[in-house]
Image (cartoon, rainbow, N blue to C red; front, side, top):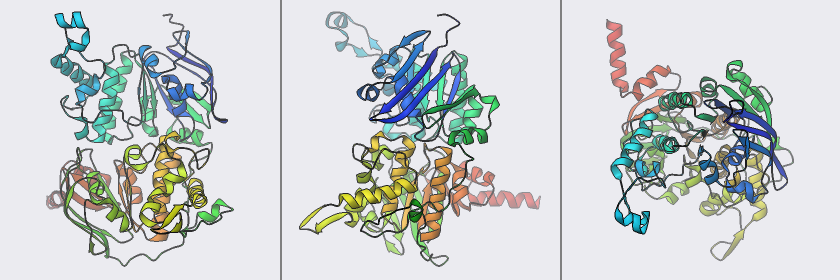
Length: 562
């Protein structure tokens, strides 16, 4: 290889989907051991560019791409991921591609298993060979150790918290012997701050070994800390390609959106009847009619001794109360049970204990009962639980309301009914406008949207239900800085104007503190304490480290006495 040639070079790369231009004239280079930060709003073209680099089949099936891509000075054209892998390009997608029933070792070495040689295998091929599990265990341990995390190679993926799964995805790519370029799409989106710091340190070590990295993240502080250069896309065009040391997070945010990043107000559609409303101006949908909030200390949700058997997020004994009209946060480290609480309440995993909704007992383990009691849920697993990926957006947004509330239907109930396609489309358009969902039309399939826009569709689906209580897990996972502000402000406005009780579960402590009235910290399946969001971050940190609220108060009293 010539030292004058970059590892990878893109020249005038462009892409169209069915007449919709998503990439225009993209050109930049990446050298060995260099870390490139690729940033942009949702829908800016990042995912399409990564799909081109990795040879994802959807690119070829939709007419290919324009321009050239070269490695070591030679033009390459990957038509499938196996071609990219053979050339030394590995990619960790935003959505997991692990086999739940397999161990960490089995997932890391999938299709690259170490075999025991024998006479039978020489005669009848490797199909009759047995696995050398000790060698596989050692290789998996080495890959995991490189990342600096303590995960057992024998742990089954279905029992892992979501953060562990992300590390296993990355370990699988590290184990490949020929990896020269590693593409990471939102690798820290599901990680806690501590886990993210561990990953960033590991990526720096990989870069020092000569592996180039394309790092995609909406956490701009991570981009400026980790990357050598930053490439910013906006509306499918390359806006800037310059050294990271020349940019700060505010400048990056401004370049991403083409304006100063602002928090949008009044971004929630108004309460709507079962029949569609003609909207001539999007501003007409952004002023919800206010509802009276409940009296202070009247509880909307009361949880007593809740346990939830959710693999990797077990809840052992949780009790707390949420006031009517409150925004209540649930935080904590990955794997300690914070995600298990809303999933158990909604009946997605086996649960026990007592849950009261506005004073009346809620039957657990029956999701339809929870939905029937005017509860709505946004799962942390948008692709596996939240969306119908092969269905259009209008169907995704209105489906749950249709099934549980009988809306968007024509005909006579229990005799003959059919979907009201016009009402579904109009409802979908309102939320697409209000949440700035980037799509071609209401008939575009949900699976074709970027991760952040898929997340907004999940929120829209919940808002259509007009819930009394809204439970949201990781509301801003994979969402860019501008969209994050829009989503958080939307939740605050919806709560303020409608009096809806909202419970937010998030790995982002500062996100919870910015929107919630109170925040509960979960530690080892139990509530370590509940604090007002205005309390110092250090107090929440102590709770996360296993110190209960009472212990913290005792320590403070002791210091005062001393």
